[in-house]
Image (cartoon, rainbow, N blue to C red; front, side, top):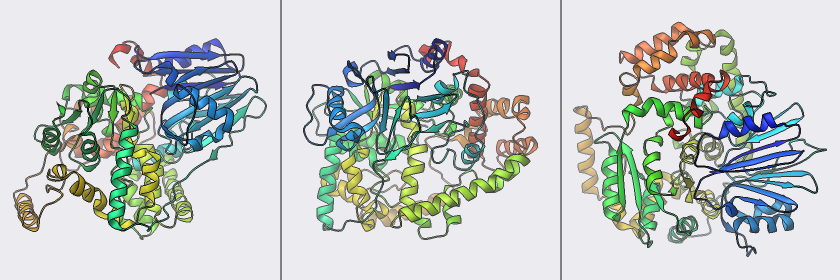
Length: 594
């Protein structure tokens, strides 16, 4: 992952040094910087990437690419990715985004015309944050670069805070910092020294118009072909590939396709001993003969993982979701690329069927993980005033989505909000260690899935049939959370349900891969108490301190499960300390450990 920073107008050597230092916390990254009197532009990239794949300094143009291009529309001349992008830019301008397929943010500075073009992929998978202040426009891959500038005034974005304490992430293009937003997905913008208004243009959006031109068998065959093409596009080079593996369908489909490739297959799983992920991952890896690495949960590193995750993600996702750190170091030792199943369990599936067709309050409660009554308990009086406003804004967003996408607004809401602003941050963490590719974000795959008839998405029908028909050995392995193979007969199903009833009666519960409910009562209890019962937390005067203490005690004593609420509170307080209080400097003392 390249870490980009770009400052247009009014910068000095002190700003440059602070911006570079804020992102330079891994001594292995390659570093490139371009500067003239109008622009500061730079990036940091992983050590194995060739410079001609992410940086091109031409006589009249500078191009910087965060990410990768996996295919091109038609034939484009050029020996390298950057040569091809330069040629396309000269021919199409910012319209070049309609001729490329990838996960990327691309920045282009035209030296002669003194203008800046920025564009990203359809999902906005490589975050680029921006702020406009004091005649400056600052873009950066991480918020910490922008707030390093002494000219930028750091203030909380209360609307972002209400989102965070509702969904465990922030909706729309907001962040937790007032004045800093995230570049909208599938968008372009062109800025000049004379005209620097941020007029974003969206070049693509989700259209769930159902296409029923094919029979079910034809859909299944085409689904297999288009999935195979997506995986092939992202494994065409010779870099070593590793696959984070659970018992789910998305990683299983990637492995089923990869099994026939003539290269070593590395798979990685983490979890508690005896968890479902461990059992099913071992069965899958044994079936395909992959070089499997199973990593036990590193309890002694949990506090470090929480702190590092808050730092990597700029505090935008709750610390209960930094689990990928358990295998990141292990993967880095063996492979260059993580092939991730992101969106594989979403695009070919009808999501949130339990609230389809219901009113907006039902939709809100499905997304509201923190729960409104608890927010009212623990928020201060001033913050409580923002709760209803936050709920109203969600309803406005929901109404806007229903107008845009009448066919399936819940899928649209999930993809443009939850997947982009929440689930994607696990991949962002991973990119601090190695490149992450996601076959199911391939444009052809996305186009095919979003127009697939809903009847083929219900209950994972098309994914299950794909495995049963074309990869039968994989289908025989039990499915995570279900306990049944994909081709189980009626007899097997009957026996399974009887065993499940017996387990319920005996109160036998499967071990979770990550169990924050238990950890916050044991391993992490002292750490949580030291942060959330501290005078510093109390002095922020944002929460009802007595109610927070009561919530913690109820959880510690096992009377209630508040793991979600504790995770959000813990993340938010650490974020305040690292970024608003300036304590993130601790992460630069020993950069080799990050």
